[in-house]
Length: 185
Image (cartoon, rainbow, N blue to C red; front, side, top):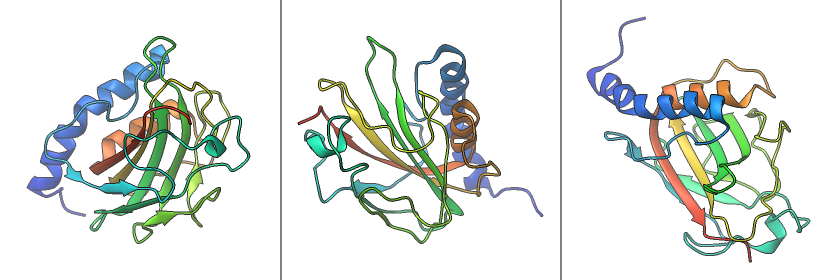
């Protein structure tokens, strides 16, 4: 196997600040992969048929609802070896919380159904230590649904620790896109 191409090395170097955020997140309980805007990353378009970027998260996808995760669609992951999804909030008063981590999504997959996990993918642990979608509860927070195109499949088991999963996602990110719900309906 040869060394990575020059664009791949540049993308990895641009993702290094995100890795530092992940290491900090693992030790402090705050922060999240890709909190900033690393240069040189390609952009993924992320949307949902249930809400638009900047709109509230529909009630059914919160801890008071019964639906589970919202459906998502994305484009811009061509050339990826796998895709990952991280759902988190940005509550700086109480510390950010990761609500869901899904990784090793087939790179040809371009959508996630309501209350489903793509076949063959794996889920990591969340901030609460649970595996799977942990519905958001704080009505005034913003919730970020971030899709990452990765240059490799992650050699991690289902239920992998959050800090390790986020670190690996950051180390392999080549593109990123986000859909943000500004609060809960």
